[in-house]
Length: 151
Image (tube, rainbow, N blue to C red):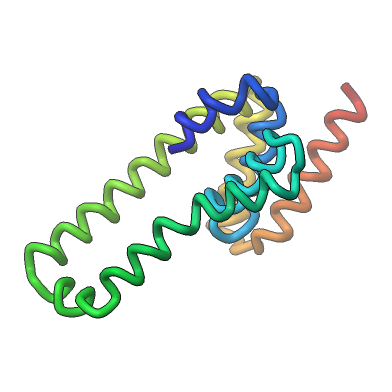
């Protein structure tokens, strides 16, 4: 979904605003939901109405599916073919998220060797030292401010 959103919205709100909104949304639960709200607010005359319409548009289909299939989901999910399909869908989602991480996030953010060093350092802090996400976000924020200050 992200490449489609980028094709549609990046020209109207600007590429930097698009990537900034996506980055901020990644720090919150449900990235596409909060990102849709952001895009709606940025692309409509009235940000509040745009945010409301986009939020309704992103949540309504799932809500209607829950209402339609709630009674039958447990029985359906117990069938081996359906449970296998669910595993396959989950694997596909992981692959799509990895592809999205690479393009547009990685290729637009990592432009110099120092950027790659920062990414590798953050990975080590996260995996080896189990540093909390909030602390990592704050460290990267400080790094970005310092880099902007001295550029």
